[in-house]
Structure formats: C-alpha cells, structure tokens
Image 1 (cartoon, rainbow, N blue to C red):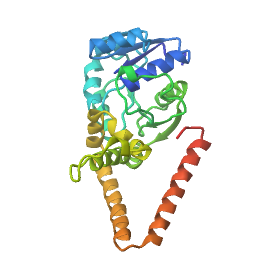
Image 2 (image 1 turned 90 degrees about the vertical axis):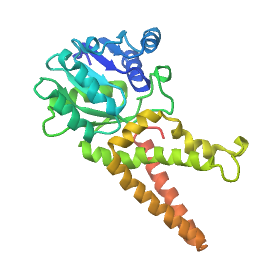
Image 3 (image 1 turned 60 degrees about the vertical axis):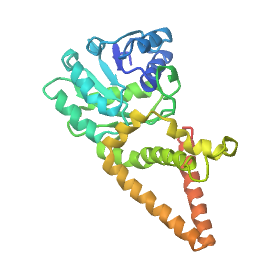
Length: 296
C-alpha cells in the first residue's frame, strides 16, 4: 500500500469507518481522508481514529487522492461521484462497497467518460445489522470475501490496486463480472435478508395475538437478525437488483409450495428427506467456508 499516498473514504458509516480503522490498524502509513455529510459523524470519526482528516465537503476530500472508496448506499453512489468528478486527479482509481454491480458500472462509467479516472467495483461480503460510524470496527473485513468487478475496459493495474487495498484490509479477493455477481448475491445475500424481514413480520402478525418475547428463542433471534439492517440501504439494493431478486423469490415460493404440499398430504417421510438434504447442503457450505479460513 506504500504506493497509495492518500486514500479518500466517502461515507464514514459501518463500512467506511471500518475500512479506515482497518487501514490504520494494519499499519497503512499514508493519509486516510474521510468525508461525511453530517458534522456529528465527522466529529466522531476524528475522535475515534476512523481517519486522519475528515470534512463535510466531498470534492475537498478527494483532492490529490490516489484511491477513492465510496461507502454510501448504492443508488447514491453515482451522484456522489458526479459531485467529485472535477476534483479527481488523473490516474486516480474509484471503488465502492455496494452490494449490486451491473447497474452501478453502467452509471459510473458514463460519469467518468472522458476522464483519466478508472472505476473498479468492490463488494466486501461483510457487514452487520448495526449501522453508522458508531458501529465501525477494525476487524469487520478480517477473513471476509471481497468480490471485485470489472469489464473488458477495466485497466488491469487499476484492478490490482483495488485488490491490494482489500487484501491489506484483511479480505480474500475474488473477481467476477458485474452480472454474475448480481445473480449470485441475489441468492446468497439479498434473498436471505428479505426472508428474515418476512419472518419477523409473520411471527408478529396480528391474528392470534402478538407473540410473547419469552417464547422467541435462539431460532427466532438467529433467523430475524438481518431484519434489523438499514432499511434505506436494503431498499437501494433491492431496487438495483430487482430482476435477479424476483427470480430468487420465485424459486423460494416453489420450495414453500412443495413443503406445504408435503405437510398437507401428511407425507412425513418425504418431508424428513427434504429436511435432511437441506441440513447436508448447509453443513457442506459452512465446511467450505471454514476450510477457506473464514468464519460462518
């Protein structure tokens, strides 16, 4: 990372703040410049060491920056890049932490057309149901998978610089095209969040009276934890990946219909086989994660 003298982080919430803490905690010797819209966030970032300098003017934050990491909700990324476009130095590389990529690449590449600035998509598959600068922690990215996305026009040196950034922060880096990324994450990330929210609503539905907290055990807490994530952030994710998410919702609806039929017909042997297969698939995926050095 010694070649990157200044890294600008636009957005100092959970993702951006954690990146700043990871960089400084792992010995990055350059300048980490932060940007946040709210003065309270800027103050918190400086008081808690999320960055070396911070302010509420985005163009000032990116001035002379070698790398710019945009850490705001995905639908807000293009407008923020448009705001700082004139202040970016030639040769700078922009990346992000958004959970969807195909739409974002199309928008950002139009904005940067005619500049000498490159864009590489990043999606560190890490996070929390908590949000805001107060939730930032230095180990958020330790062992996490980070997917980089690009196309045939993405310069290889820019891809390498962004890969170096995330490796330095503790991530294990993979490369995918934007469309493949969005299809995969609709299944492994976006659908689980939607189902967690649906379960939270279903358990608390008004018919039959509200459930008592004492009867909501570890299963409820584990299954509905994701529902506590930032609604605004997830709205952007769902909107920018609608077609892939709708496809996955159709698949889960088919599974639920199958389970409904088995129970309705009292086909308990078939139900048991379904449950056994589901458990085996889950254990296989988790064992692969653990063998790869990541936590569940």
